[in-house]
Image (cartoon, rainbow, N blue to C red):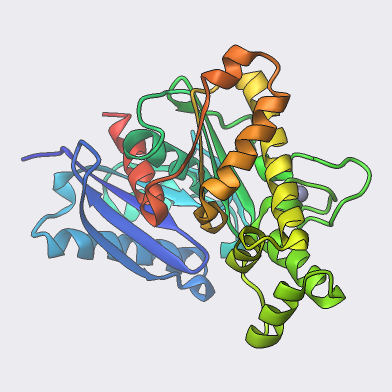
Length: 321
Ligand SMILES: [Zn+2]
């Protein structure tokens, strides 16, 4: 009986994604279902267990074929204990996820934060392949991050490391952030921040192009601001330049401390491609202290998209085999 297969699960605020992987990280089968947040932690954990069992049954397998199951959650995690300290979107606090899911499935369960498993996924099978010193950033509704040193995620004493989005870029001012501070990287470089800045320019009439798009569609998306900037709209370009400048600045701070081989950037905003990445690299190179550290660090788009989490969750198990 083979125990070489692993399962990776990514619990989000809206959906639970699960994948069955072979020992090389190739996805054999996937399943995705809505997260029943209203059922509370026991309801969500039971649903994760059901999804895992159904995914195995679909492939004519059972839990005996799995070496274990790795699970990512959107919150701070005590990795040793498998306890979720706090996951706002799920309404969880001090949730003993490992204990409860192991009781349900009867196989080893490993738990980590969702941004961390995405970073591990990119290291194993994505743009981060070839280095064990990697920083992964996701530019979405917020700015999430995972830091890998020598192949290991850095967790810190409270599982609260990797909060790259809340690095302060402007100490005395700047837009407000969800964390309660102002001037965080997230308040410049997240999709939310870029849309907010674009909407402001559209409403003030500073950007005729964005004003027209806002009037036509009722709201703006981050890609509208990037398209306007690429079309030569100065107000839109200023928003993109500011986001890229602060992103490069924040990454230079991290590179000065960690000297990573790669920085991988994913999420909706990263879809802007080279128009964004070239600007981020310019700012990054300007602020990295040693030319050798800048030259040895590649800044690349993430390649796994929504699969990064389940693949990285599978890596949690693979790494313990
Ligand atoms: Zn913040």
